[in-house]
Amino acid sequence: MKTPRRNPLDKERFLEGNRQKWVAIGLLITLSVMVSNIVAHIDPALGSWDGASIAPQRSISVAQAAKPRTKRQKPQHGSLPQSIMMTQRFLRFIPFILKWEGGYDNDPDDPGGETKFGIDKRSHPNVDIKNLTKEAATEIYWHEYWVKNGCEWKPEPLGEVFFNACVNCGAGRARTLLGDPASPRTAADFLAAQDAFYRRLSEARPALRKFLKGWLNRTSDLRRFFGL
Image (tube, rainbow, N blue to C red):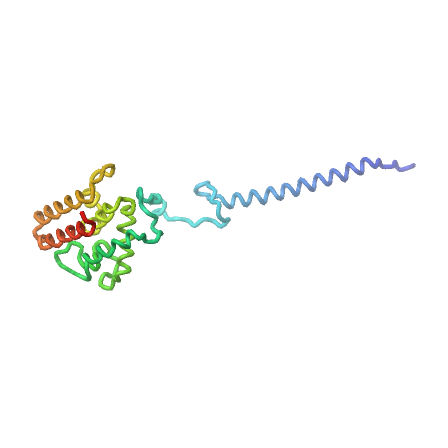
């Protein structure tokens, strides 16, 4: 009995079927790897994509979880980035501040306590006031007073007068003296309001009366500095 001869077309179909099967297996393996990587990138607690690495995320304590997330602080309107170099305008005026603030002092009647170049211990508890250098004080004035309060964006000399008040009276009081931001005082009006504040303060707190003459001499010198 003769064995029936196989149709060549059947062999081709068999080989083609095997090729398709192995291609399908390869695709399944590739898809499985991709899914594994995706799962590894998902935070199981939040169900969100971390987009960084496949390492498991560090667990946090209950106290950390309960702590509200803090939003990134936006710079005040018109303020300069903290990393920018000191401007020529600031560098022209800072000697006036350093001249009037003077060197080291620790007057018991001064609310700021230990002070050098006008940098006080109460506002800067982590600064070694006694060994503070003039360069370090200038850095503090640049970042914490000039930049932070947007002095560069105020017209000259109002920006400088406002800066001087931020240093001598505090930023909150300086903003009050400035008045309505949409229609701020002129530099001359600002200084008049500052003098009136000093007089009211010395009347309300007799221990500060000994500073009144120096405060008023400083604003008078500021008027001469800018020809006001």
